[in-house]
Length: 249
Image (cartoon, rainbow, N blue to C red; front, side):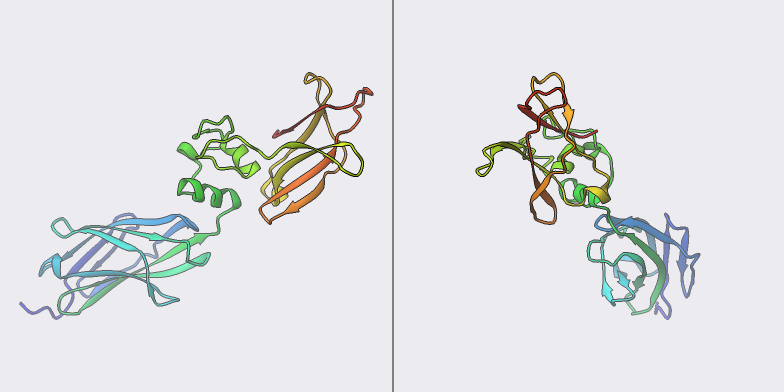
């Protein structure tokens, strides 16, 4: 039997869109995703002359590029589409899901892929956990590498949350000019915009701690992390400070 028109039925289960024969009913579906995460949906397709002869592709309308990958089961008509959103621009991306039968006739379902730019902490989770989601081993309070630092602390000090170490970059250094001891420590360059707070405290006996009021000097800044320095102060009780720590409130 010749196929004058595409006899494919696409049912976007997650979007509530149906496309069949020679017409498409498009209710204006959309997907929302954090940039860098995978965009996904499930669907079904059916062609009266057999699903094996149907080709599927997703077209990024603005660039004309085919994006994403399909996993399909021709016997059941089930399909899954997934797409790495890292190269896509933030904002609304028009996408066309195109099914073409063996005779070359096509039907199209259009949808909007809404991409939101990832925040610094979401980008950090993607780097180490493969997703921006605050769940599982990626939650702030988790310590997946068992080094005693929570994920929040690893983010704040620029360390690897899945490779144990625990070195947060704090050390003591003798100032060659003044002959006095200085505390060297680390913080994020974007700490103000990310909302990460650091409290720098000194003590003479490891019992009583006092927050330093002296602004630290920026020794180096690579755009991601800063190395800072501050001179060991005399405490309010008149004692010389001997110990230093960085605390995340």
